[in-house]
Image (cartoon, rainbow, N blue to C red; front, side, top):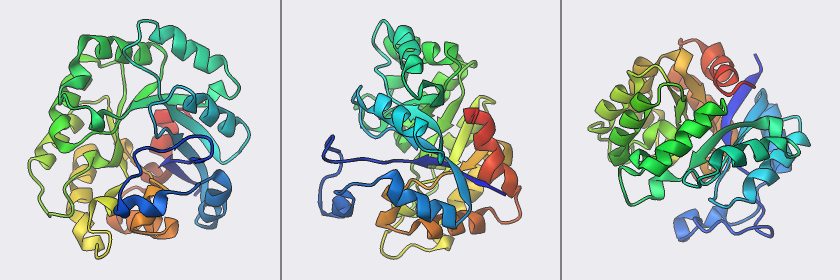
Length: 277
């Protein structure tokens, strides 16, 4: 089976600063991470296709990611960024698709986790933008914190034509060991048929120095039960994952957490279908 990694990043600090990389905990990420760095690690563990995901809310980044996809056979899709609140967002999505590599645009993401308004997704201008994403047959990746999940549920219910992909399980509080209210919110989201979840980002929500598979298992079990393998996909979150684990370790842990569940769907088929790879 050729594994699909549904979530990773790249950046070149000489092109653009990653202003979210601050403080000593994130200091190991303050260097360039390229496809040339990722490819040997991915190929070595059977990953043959990936989805490259935006990192900053800068309009120039998405065309760069599309061009990278066009020039590299590892990348099968791009989740980019555009300002959802701009009145001409539909035209902008069409423009992105006309760029070199535009056919690789599969979804849009916004750093909702950084928005102070917990109901940012429900603003009228944002919902118009989300409707344009649906009209363009793209998906929307949700990078949110636990307290923003109720708004995700409302948004997904009000836009049944749009597929919402929950990144990193909605960032559960793994380090504290708490399940609630995160689990209740995630189950409410999973109850909607137009939602999907990425099994990604868990190792960096745990204690990076002392995490174990046992620490992660309760959260994986919630999403396995709530979404099932048809709506669950593996993502490495490389290079952010390197704060706590190697690329190989992240894939191995995902395999151990999913066990006897349908590996083909979780590690390939779901991402292929949802992103149209």
